[in-house]
Image (cartoon, rainbow, N blue to C red; front, side, top):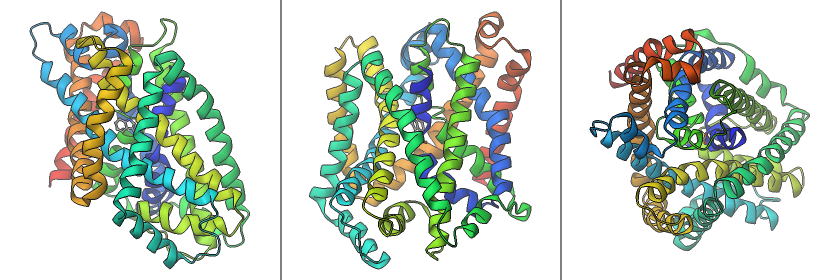
Length: 411
Ligand code: TRP
């Protein structure tokens, strides 16, 4: 399951969000804060969520019932399942774009194009209902297909194959990117620490990013942990996932920023970078590189989306006694509806993104750590965590930091 957890963590968050945030918030200074947030808050939350899953061996809803048979936490289970579903829906839209761009790159669609023309392609895709919705459905269909294949033979197998392949692909892209003339400035952009940009907002951004990147707060880690083998340790699983996830984000940074600077382009935000600038830059180096790049994004997105869909499927299978393939189909149909709305109406997309990342995930992370720190019997927790120090972080540091960040965000 550790590979599957790493697969869930490594995703679109690493490839387009992390590199851009590093640049925005002071380069290496942000990376240092990100790692500190990861160690002191996100990892403890990961351990907490995993403890709930491994101790109860149930889906998110079942786990909440097992911990409080009086039904106190019933709604927490429901909220987590709904949150995963919402994230899955808008995530599939971006996953669909990567599939679309993979096809376009295979056909050599970006060679000889200028950035302005690539921008028109991106805008045109948004207005083409068939293309936008169609690609989203293909992506969602692939996701549901892997999940329908089962925990071991679908999710586990896909993660075991895709993670090493993905790592190799990204290292290849980073190597090419770093050898381009003029790429040095991109490296400087990532490694030059600018402590003057470090403020409350930067810390909040680092924490939010590390929650999103480690897939916390909505039951994905909980659900995957419920499938862990007895001899797979929670501390090892969390540490490996966080290590792999952070390395991957850094490699993605070194794959993207040097190429952007080498082409003399301002590193602008998020999707526009990956879907407007990079296809053009990479196409100048032949047909193969953009294909590898978009294939990598597609694989990274798929290994994350399956973890989101699995949360809902696990609930349907364990609580509603549906068969796995039927559950996967059902989630596919519902997510296709919300996904279509996200694909066609930017406001729906942004609202789903905002509510899930800023409200639901934070609330979930807070509640999971409070349950493990204050509700579950101390001995049970220590059996899984085996460290009083980490137990202390779950009990005090994580909740305090999450509340502090939430308050800062509101102000
Ligand atoms: N971590 C993934 C990424 O970085 C996305 C993801 C998967 C996720 N499961 C999640 C985000 C659960 C939040 C919650 O792209």
